[in-house]
Amino acid sequence: MSSSTNTNFKQYLVSAKPKGVAIPAGLQDLLLAVVNTCSTLSHEVAQGALIGLLGSAGSGNVQGEVQQKLDIIANDQLMDGVKGCKSLAGLASEEMELPVPVQGTGDYLLLFDPLDGSSNIDVNVSIGTIFSILKKQDPNAPLQTSDFLLSGRHQVAAGYVVYGPQTTMALTLGDGVVMFTLNKETGEFLLIKDAVTISPATKEFAINMSNMRHWADPVRRYVEECLAGTTGVRDKDFNMRWIASMVADVHRVLSRGGVFMYPWDKRDPKKAGKLRLMYEANPMSFLVEQAGGASINGTQTIMDLEPTGLHERVSVMLGSKEEIDRLRQYHS
Ligand code: AHM
Ligand code: MG
Image 1 (cartoon, rainbow, N blue to C red):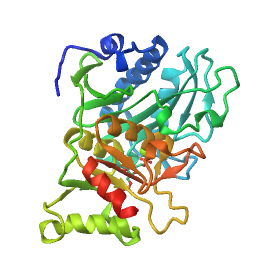
Image 2: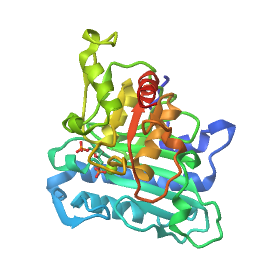
Image 3: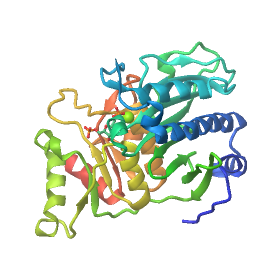
Image 4: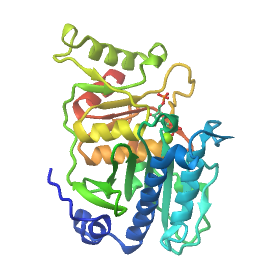
């Protein structure tokens, strides 16, 4: 893995040639608009209570979840930040029921979770923004919700920005994963890692253990075997982490390997899980696959799922390939 501290994000976009092809100007504009907004958001997240941003907004989102003030602010700022983008046809957000058409002449579609890990905002634990970019199949037709309902394989770009001790972005354009860290003095994202790879083997897993009594048998078996370590069937002992911010947990997986799971459980007759396919699972799965890892819902590869709704939820297991292969086998 090589690194550089000199290349800023704009320079990277101009010089990168994913799969040997220059990044289209319209996609560069859109990515810059998203990332510049995240740079501003990073500054605001860091101010927190000093500028009155903590706490609940007293409202709920489309999925009935309590919205934090920062959920709404981040959503509004991302909308404002990209709406002038000529290459953008429309956007959809975890926080809004319906997609929003944008007055662009282009055909890119942007989906985002403006502030993932909201439960961590007030306790000063890492949170982040997740984004996914698709291409509208019929550029001339008026924008409809169905335009967004494409499998993860259709993504042309995906990434996240994690607001932690450092503000770091991971990005894929379908040819590997790169990481940038925000220089908070200049507001520029600088390249810190290219060719990010997830080691196929790991000794670390992440899951909310408090749901254990509700899990399906394959997940319970897998986690019980990790907990038993060398006293059971595994040849190694495992460590566990759970930040409760998918961005931060996936950032750890991309940085040092591991398995992240948010499986469906027996409380849900639809076997859907908690995380959203379009705003969370697809972009993270794209990143993880591009870094050499794997991502499944148990039996199926997440990137191959055909979405049926904008706010659809999905069971997620992603990370180091050997462990995901084992989980897939336990589900078969
Ligand atoms: P959010 O988008 O409303 O913040 O919810 C998603 C988050 C993920 O970041 C995280 O993995 C999960 O919810 C944590 O859930 P739990 O509190 O059940 O552990
Ligand atoms: Mg989220």
